[in-house]
Image (tube, rainbow over all chains, first blue to last red; front, side):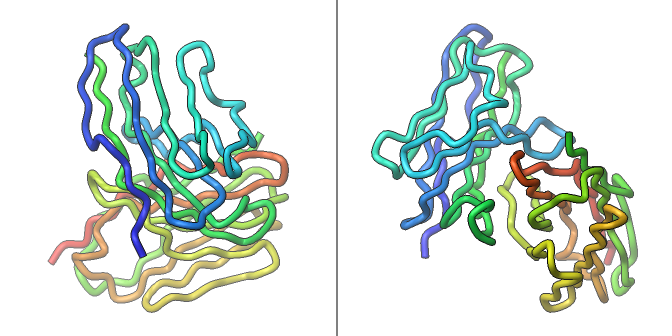
Length: 117
Length: 111
């Protein structure tokens, strides 16, 4: 079974530029999560989707971050414009269903390391 | 608001030792608790998932316990090996909230 795929693996941009990350979850997984992990900290949930609908985006900085999952499969996370404090690893994860609806484990992709200079 | 802490922040042990990693959480109304492993430059790998009604889970040399009333979980690693070197994170799922991670414990097992 293929795991969660993410691209690119690394990205370096200047502040005020825009960037996009792509995630393809495990086949059949209805729920998709985007996390931000700053160096030395645990991941922080940014947004979670159930199929193509947003379940929770309360921690997503909506003035600069956006995410979509149009066909309920792969997803894109965008930052525009980027700030220095956005430097982090962006992790995508998927699970069969929302953990609140069942005891489904999350499976993580390798992440995208973003450096904003 | 749920807060998750992990002690120690870093740990270095000789190969073969048994060790315990600690995770504490402030809100006992959790749905489940999960332990992950993170290798440098890689994503997270799930190790053990403990449901709120359970007290422990075991997988190979790993044993995780959960005490909801005291807001604690421990991850026990038996007979540690250099390949166990990684960062270990715990995370809790709270009703009506997000999946909240601790900052992790960075483990080094020396040959």
